[in-house]
Length: 467
Length: 100
Ligand SMILES: Cc1cc2nc3c(=O)[nH]c(=O)nc-3n(C[C@H](O)[C@@H](O)[C@H](O)COP(=O)(O)OP(=O)(O)OC[C@H]3O[C@@H](n4cnc5c(N)ncnc54)[C@H](O)[C@@H]3O)c2cc1C
Ligand code: FES
Image (cartoon, rainbow over all chains, first blue to last red; front, top):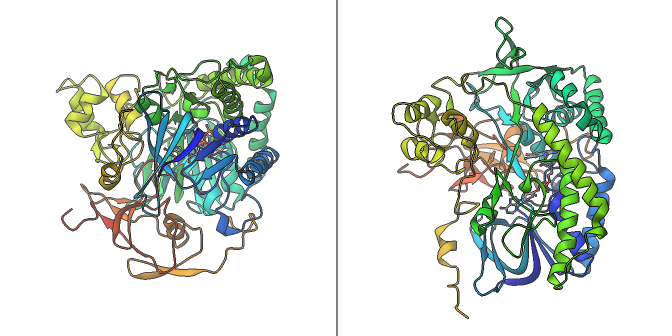
């Protein structure tokens, strides 16, 4: 029946790995559950095992950190302290009555129709994030992919989205994505960033506090220069063109106010567009557990505890800030869990180094967040026939109608009136655009389950026994 | 150049699968999406409403745009499902069910 463990960690990215290893080092029996074939998450994603690749397709900036994490994971697995369940998609973490801990429900098998349950006394949620893409005309054409998605398929599957790629949007992810694509053999026709260099300068003090992180950006920019790619700052992709697949994009400059500068539009031929406007945290497992959020992030205290006893969270789930922040938060969570499971209060001085890193990196992330902003008129530039909800094929015009004529005041009413957000992705892709059109802040989706669940799996769950 | 070169990858034996009846090459560990991209195919679904072509969007299993029919089973995410020798991949129209 259900496997039993002390700590279940959901997500084997930087945060989950750091948490699992810190807890295991203190004698905690850990089960690490992840949807992917291998550990690493997004940042440390490796080529599929069967490819027998000797290295990633482009040099990884933190190869040594990865080797250290991987070796430690191998050691604890060999010793039986850590069990790593790969290709397990967690659809719900359930709090069992009478303090009997948690049941982590996952789907596995090739069609994800087999149910598996892990019982645990504590849970660390380290599910990372996914990309936000703000719609524009043509963004549903095949060949338009998310920037992180292009990176993920390249790193994991060693294949390019096209021969000639435009990388566009906003955020610190665009530089490594463009560098990775160029080094793997794609022609990067343009790197289009809507933020302007002035915004960077205004935030200089906060950014200067992290010379290492700034150097990382400079390093990617230098690598790109070798391929003749110069980032186009304060520019945006206005439209993607093509009949049944992408053939070109229109790129235009933005003025100081972040609006389209007239007369600057030009066409760039390409067969792939890798586009992204920052990341959003995965919070569905936390929401089902009843954990409080702040904005779109799972709220945690200084020990990375959520407000539900026994549930910790770390990494992008608690706010987007990059892999180093995820590592620091995961480490603190793992140490806190080890102490709390023994029934003692941890001594925060023991993780002072990680704590300082966390403080610094959170400040850095906040500064970046202010620098990297989408164009200010992105909502107005969605034409009425621009698809907003990709699953249910709902255009911006129908959402505008729901908001204007029908008086919908929030995403929920828009969903009921238009079906935007009712499809397979459960509103993850259209959420930001619906919020923009409605004039409301983005609120988490209140999804009952993190993954669509086959009825057979639901029916096969044991009844909770009163005891 | 293929990205497999800088990665020094030497995939094990290549095998064949079919896409809409035509043979395409695949290797162990490759997902449906990666094999289709390698074969130059970018779309393998027609949407339910407008019959519009779709393929990979998020690449990590979140968007469900890449749904495809594998061995008669519709609604499989091409970006996640690894291929096995002899797999039969079909473009998914609408819900992928006859009545769809
Ligand atoms: C597509 C994508 C590509 C990215 N590429 C880069 C990059 O190249 N460079 C960079 O600096 N940053 C990249 N990032 C940013 C990334 O978020 C890193 O900052 C870092 O990996 C975050 O670490 P994390 O541990 O919080 O989450 P992640 O690394 O995202 O790890 C989360 C893990 O949880 C697993 N997971 C999530 N939900 C479930 C579930 N329900 N059941 C089971 N497992 C689950 C995932 O499979 C994943 O392995 C990328 C982000 C995305 C979304
Ligand atoms: S591309 Fe998004 S789920 Fe496969």
